[in-house]
Amino acid sequence: MLEKVLPHSMLKAKPNLESRIKTLKRDWAIVYDMLSGKDNNDFGWDEHRQTVVTKDVMWNSYISSHKAAGQFRHHSFSYYDQLTSIYAKDRAIEKYAQTATDIVKEIDVEEGNNYHECKNDVSLDEMDV
Image (cartoon, rainbow, N blue to C red; front, top):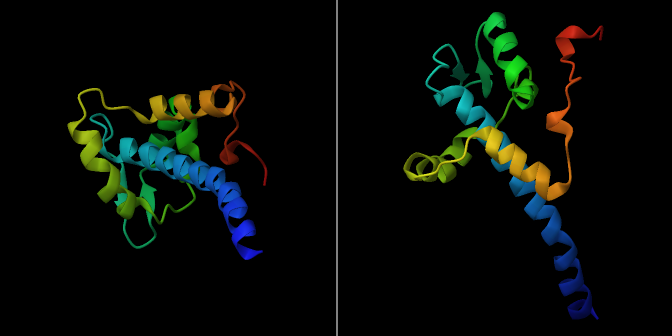
């Protein structure tokens, strides 16, 4: 009986794992682009808190054109170092390396999601919380 249940449960877990991997890769690409972009010298990485750091004015400017990056303004990304060791080499040597925007758009198309194209995004800084 267990043999019949196990394959089915593994099949159910696969889409969840694939989704989680896509999310982690998308999030890593967003942080990586913030930290390694040629015009982003003011961004840094706080190793202790596992967060991206910069001045508020830089955050505001960057988030205005990179909405998906807003999630990392006040939240840590504890898998960044590990994912960098997996993905950074591929990004550095690929002839047609994807940007975070490319990855987010690709995932949105695959999932039928247009959240990142929403023009009415509001950051937590603009809300009374």
